[in-house]
Length: 327
Ligand SMILES: *[C@@H]1O[C@H](CO)[C@@H](O)[C@H](O)[C@H]1NC(C)=O
Image 1 (spheres, rainbow, N blue to C red):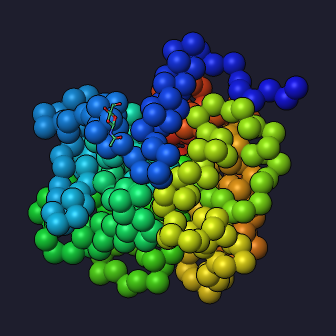
Image 2 (cartoon, rainbow, N blue to C red; image 1 turned 120 degrees about the horizontal axis):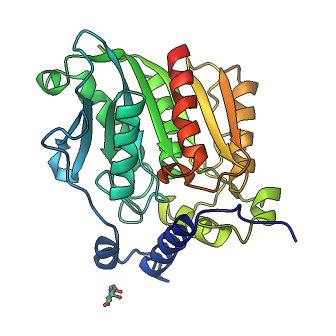
């Protein structure tokens, strides 16, 4: 029988199984999420109001009426004269779970900010099924416009280089990153220049069952039973997974050939059931004349990057740094 997971440290395996268990117990059969339960299980982290290892962070409200805010990470030990790239980050969680203040994502964004280094803007977008497509995409794009605007000027670190912005995200956040990048490509910003897109194991799909979805049906974290539920919670009532939000280069997709789309890095794991969709995404970008780079880690499971002890997690930071340097 084909292996569905690599050798992993026992603590990683336990943590992954725990997250998967949480995802399952918070999902109700009627397609809703038990938020009370989720808030209990989803460990939160406060921003770093005092510097820790050369990093400070703060939460900034964009629009109170929909609780749209972001956590801003600012590395301090870099001289103000040295400009740092800016990353708009979208967390994963199947469009329905987690937040910018979830401990796993706070830890990961701290690592990105310190180790790349970069200014990181981790966006707390609205979640499904309470807020379906396109709420999360609107929130993501509005966060970009907010940073482009006057109101934020004094609150951004002086060394933030708005001419070198990247849009990044993992899993459902990688899907968001793509769709926000499309909106950004259709928009004229005053200050911002989006120079790259980093899609970490982005969550794309369709009606078809791919080879990797079938072969890795027993994989850790992700399987079609869970992903089908997530799409159903996120997509408009009555639509199937051929919707352009899921199947970005499928029959219902919007043609982006003519768009000035940023260079894209697509990260794929060999033990991720979603890898065939992600490779199709990479191929789709190339076919439409976009600059795209495929990075494959044969032993990586879905969401490997939140485990700093995994070798691929360090490799990812190095590969992101190389990609960002060249854009
Ligand atoms: C949410 O989960 C908690 C704990 O299991 C349970 O007591 C509560 O009844 C659930 N709420 C709903 C609306 O299902």
